[in-house]
Every structure is written in C-alpha cells, then in structure tokens.
Length: 239
Image 1: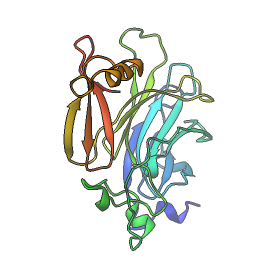
Image 2: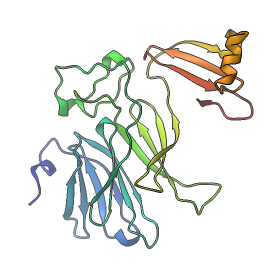
Image 3: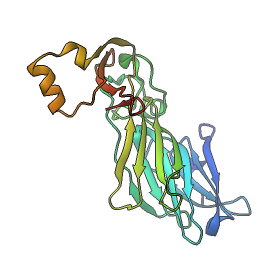
Image 4: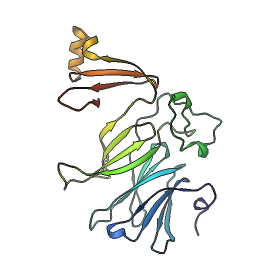
C-alpha cells in the first residue's frame, strides 16, 4: 500500500530521471513531501523511500556501464542523500555546506510550509525551516573530467544561497569537497585590495598567510567577508 505521503493535493513531483544501464526500465522521481519513488515499466510505484527531509528538489543518476550505479537526491536544509538505484537502499549522506550566517527563522512559520522557500535577498528575511541553518540543495549534476575522460566523475551541487560545491564521491566512505564557490547573499558594502591597504609588517603577514598577488576582500550585508584573487595567471576565484 502506498503511503499517504505519496497522495494528496499538497504533493507534487519536483524532479524525475530515467534509468539507464541495468536500470533502464525504471523512472525515478522526487516529491515536495520528501519522498523518493521508483516507477516500473507499468508506470506503477515499485519502491519508495522517505528521505527524512521536509522536501526534496532534484535527482541525478550515476550509472556506469555494467555497474549498479548511484542515485543522488538533493533535499531541504542542505541534505544530499545517495541510494542504490536498483533497491533504493540508503548508501550515504554528503557533508553539509556552509551554514547560513545571520539567518533568523521566523518562529510563526510552520516547518513544512517553510522548508523549501528560496532564500531571500536580506538575511533577516530568509524563510527557513525552524531547525534549519543550511540552504536547500536545488540542483545536482554529474561533472566529467575534460582532462581525463576515464576518471570517475565528480558531483556538482547548487544551493539556495547561490553557492556551488563540487564533491569527490569516488569513495562513498570518504566523500570530500573538491571545489567550492561561495558568494554573498546580500548587497556588497565595500571592496579593498589587500596589497593596497597593507604596508610593512602587515603586508609581510599577508604574504606569509599564503594570499596570492591580486587578492582583494569584500564585505556584505550578509555579515560575511570573502577573499578573492584576480591573479592574471588564474581565473578569478574565491579563496
């Protein structure tokens, strides 16, 4: 019998992905009520799993030829869970992203009504889950290496606070962050190049800290300061 969480006027499908390889006859979908479903060839729900999240938003299927693969689901509160695509057996949960600094969840908003709301521009207006201090994951995507096509692909994840993380999931028992790109969530108040504002001992300290030439810092209304490098030898990136 299908659980009540799969029916009702408030439930809607957020994302779906078709199976491939050994799972070519399956279709997977994730719902606004935080449920992962597997549909068979007869368009019937064959298996379903509660994601233990107020909501879920996106899916990605890693399905190398001849292997069982990996099904990845992005959920509310920064949660990303991994499952076996054949059995929907739980495998792992990715580490959480950076917390939402300065977020004050409104106590009057119900948890389930609030869990999947997009982060607002001002930190004081962020509509978040009552117990949540992490942005929801709105996108997951497999990223293949352009330098080494035979290498295991990475996983790119996009969060509601405009941050982008790239994860190395070649070892599911030791998931590691490969790259992260985090940006301000509110207006930028000031920008200063480190080398233009530091002299003498302070400049030497900046160099000893490993800051590359061309480093500048920005401060924002979201209560954060970010360091960037604009070194001509590299593309501009957050450090």
